[in-house]
Length: 86
Image 1 (cartoon, rainbow, N blue to C red):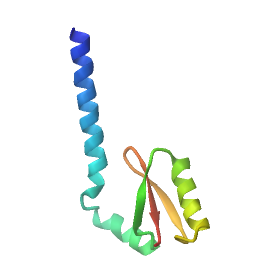
Image 2 (image 1 turned 120 degrees about the vertical axis):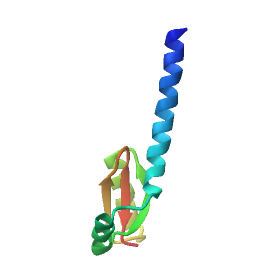
Image 3 (image 1 turned 30 degrees about the vertical axis):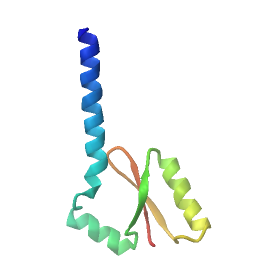
């Protein structure tokens, strides 16, 4: 029984931490980060990806389809963030 209780507690803590991490980008970004994105013109957030390869594939597909001209995959806490110019 103690192992089952410990496992349940670990799963609850992990789920809470992941939920908090996915909600954290909704908070205001530091001013210096926002200025860098605005200067690059990559100010549209398109989504989060588990792997760098997935982010790069999505970015390249968007270019090929004509949705945007440039993209950047920025490393986050748990995910890669896809930023585009439009």
